[in-house]
Amino acid sequence: MLSPVYIAVGSNLGDRSLTIRAAFAALRAGPVLDDVVISGLWETAPVGPIAQPNFLNAAIVASSSRTPAEILSFLFGIEASLGRQRRTERRFGPRTLDLDLLMVGDCVMDTDYVVLPHPRLHERAFVLDPLCELAPTLHHPTLGLTMAELLAMLPPHTFSQPVPVPP
Image 1: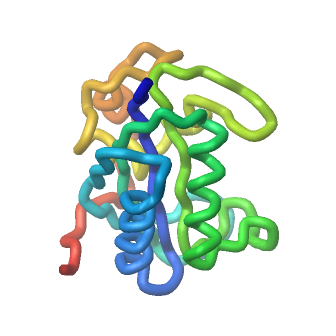
Image 2: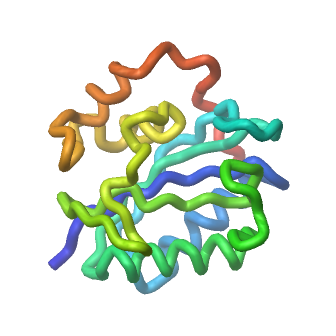
């Protein structure tokens, strides 16, 4: 059975737009996701204690018959193929590519490997802005609010804006 899959995408090292386009192509070409659609790109300030360049962020909606663990493993493989080194990078630091599994249908789970829905999804404008482009009426499975309602509850954005996508 196919479930909707929601993924956050971010990059703040190297050619961010090119990296995101390469990730999108890998997501579409791989055997795990079907009907892959990407939002526009958003330029956002980094979150966390480490000084670093701004991010480009996007959201992806797809469908899959795979388990959340299989989907997450697929995402990690794409990150690694595009230069991410999870084991050596600092938490909340700069990265070539970040693919966060946000939700898989209404699945709620908390294991050592997969936590769904993503535990900070509702706190991050850089996730909710692009996700609302694609699925503003999507309901958070534990909070019961739509993505648009969650975005409206956040404090005013200090820096988040859509940017044109180069061809």
